[in-house]
Image (tube, rainbow, N blue to C red; front, side, top):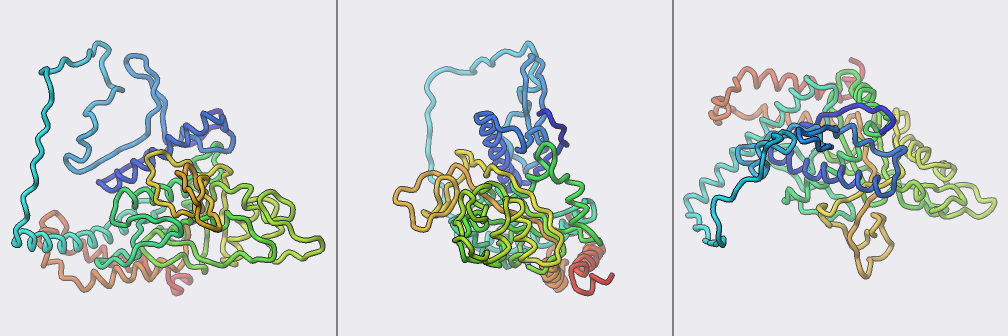
Length: 425
């Protein structure tokens, strides 16, 4: 890349994080392949932000992710202990230890006895409690040791009793499948991080973090839309609805009374133009007064900025638009409804012969507002009524009871920042 850009090191901790990371890196590879085929380098994603160039001991050029992956024992067993980056010059191909045919034996698993099934259910109850305690400790510690923290989940609640999964129009995903849920979150993360992965950077990461984390509000919320929404043509005489973006942080839909937006739109550069006579729009008859200010915008960036100001008057808006949509790799699940076309837009009627979706426009936003306050307060209330001594293994793991009390106090102070009383502090 000719233009300078920053460098980002990605850290993946745990099985689900690595599952999400697999989709994330496949999305990056698909973007690199699209740019190399179409030779569109200007105002596009700069892969040098997340990848690094190098040379092996054999002189082979490499382009590898800046990645630190940590998993449970056996979780990364499919990977080699040493990659080809560190191969010795004199390394030769290993000689097989035996020759001949390979025989495969299949054996049915033993049925679980009623006692073992009951013990497994009891263990699952303990696991939910441990996940809740780890959740609040993670929120507090990550907010204290980072410039900005945004939890991502497709569950409508972060407590022990998760609510129904987030409903995303025209995305028929299975919330119980990590393959599906991690793909949705990876697509959201890819859209949210696009502004500071361009060359030159349209919105540096430091600037975005400083803008969203004012007055000690280190935790932000995220929302995403993949069904067209803003990205479809606006018919003449029709207003754009003041709908909320589906949330992906474990709480209600993004509140319209916010302090600051950080929105990113990918794709739909031509489809978003509602001005009369523009490509992809429905022209207004001569002498007709535009039904809304959105119909007077001349570019996708102006339309997105105007929309954010319309749905959240008085909020500071940081809008970014990229002309190219999100390129989907072959490994991405095809969980789209029959209304979704190959380019990712929605049709008025179901397609007679649905084809594989290879790209999709996306709209994602980070938000700092009061929507997070009730979510943090609900977590504090749920853990406050729990006697941790009933789960001794949590304390024997190294967590002291006084440390948990301090975490709850910090969580309460953090929730106070997102209340009306916190505005005056």
